[in-house]
Figure 1 (cartoon, rainbow, N blue to C red):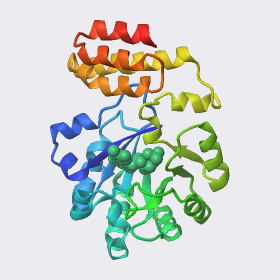
Figure 2 (figure 1 turned 60 degrees about the vertical axis):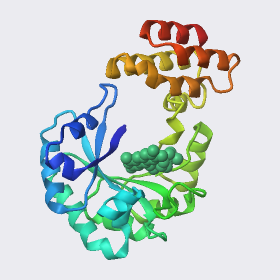
Figure 3 (figure 1 turned 180 degrees about the horizontal axis):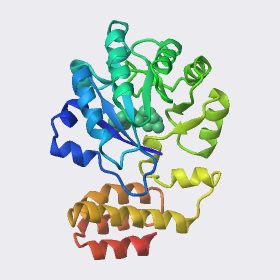
Amino acid sequence: MTFSEMINVNAVAYHNEKTKKMMQKSPLETPYFVQLAANNVENAIKAVEIINETEWVDGIDINLGCPVNKAKRSGFGGVLLKDENKNLLKEIVSAIVKTSKKPVSAKMRTGFDKSVVEERAKLLEDLGVLFLTIHGRTVKQMYKGKVNYEEIKKGVKAVNIPVIANGDITDYEKAKFVLEYTGASGVSIGRGSVGKPWIFLEMKQKGSISKEQKKEIILEHFNQMIYWYGEYGVILFRKHAHAYSKGLPGASEFRSKMNSVKDPDIAKELIEEYF
Ligand SMILES: Cc1cc2nc3c(=O)[nH]c(=O)nc-3n(C[C@H](O)[C@H](O)[C@H](O)COP(=O)(O)O)c2cc1C
């Protein structure tokens, strides 16, 4: 399953056009949950009512992890895990669960500046969340330091609902280790898919992936970029072409060709030829 990027309930509630575009998905994404970031109950309810009527959205995920300053200042994301925000957290989560006609999950960090993973996981379970994703870092840690799989394991033990383990999972072996170590029901992958979107297929195939499959995925990515952004997609694809060719022979020549091309058909030929 896939999750949208975090979407602010205030923007959804006021029918912001850009926000609607952020909620779109590919037909390949199923089930697909929209992730909401909320700092007040009223707009959280309005946003959920809109999502109730959006038939291509399968569920709602509540963001309880975002560590960026803007989120902290506005009071959504990981800051809701602070002790002083516990009542607001309860109000927001129970309002979303009560209003939603679709399944509701939550994505949490282990705590704000220290781990409160067991207590908050249990609280979210009691509030009716159907499953949890736990990123094994505190909000204060941002993305630094090692993920604490021990804390994820504690979260798994504290609840009866499924827990998805998250953080620093970059290949099949690591996913296998994390599943076994934490006892989680699944894993979720963020940065591990950047430059490596075949990671999901690789996992389904227990760690193996052929050159042909990689090429097919790279071409699919390119075609979708052109479909979505038009000719500008060629420019936007440059950074991906760099990532995909990393460590391969002739990469610098391929990159400089990609950097000079603007025509989608020529770019596609270069990709087909190189990979
Ligand atoms: C640029 C960037 C944007 C992110 N945006 C979101 C987001 O919108 N919602 C969310 O739950 N997590 C978001 N995350 C966090 C990831 O989902 C994930 O929890 C974290 O990166 C650790 O997992 P990973 O090592 O698999 O990436 C973001 C991370 C990065 C680096």
